[in-house]
Image (cartoon, rainbow, N blue to C red):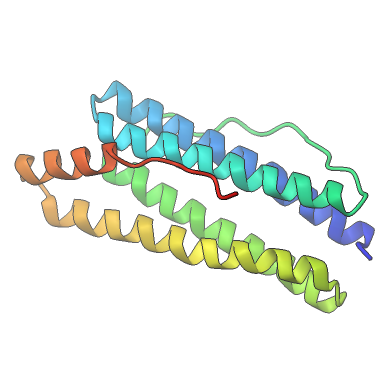
Length: 167
């Protein structure tokens, strides 16, 4: 049975996932304004993923017969010192999401709320992938430095990224 405390934390995480979507849209806007079209696409796809995560929590709460409550969000940062800065901030954001998911999982474990424990395993696995993806891109950007050809190739590679929600 979902306690009120766990329900509140699930709703909070759902709203944070919606906020994450806005964070990545803001980063896409920055990239687009700088004509980094492939990087902009990467962040647009990332924003779609975050909205998908939020809706996954929304549906889970409703499936348990409880109410998903959507709340307002703070404005995301819209200015970055560089492309590398945007990705480093995105990586820090994902680390925050990971901590939040772990905290949520700890509450579910303490309450022995097995349905939520099982549900959150997907998010834990997803966060491993998210952090690894951002770390990899950051490492590539650092190696590229001022190599315009390598930068163009990475931009083109990220421009091919798509989002296909799982069934």
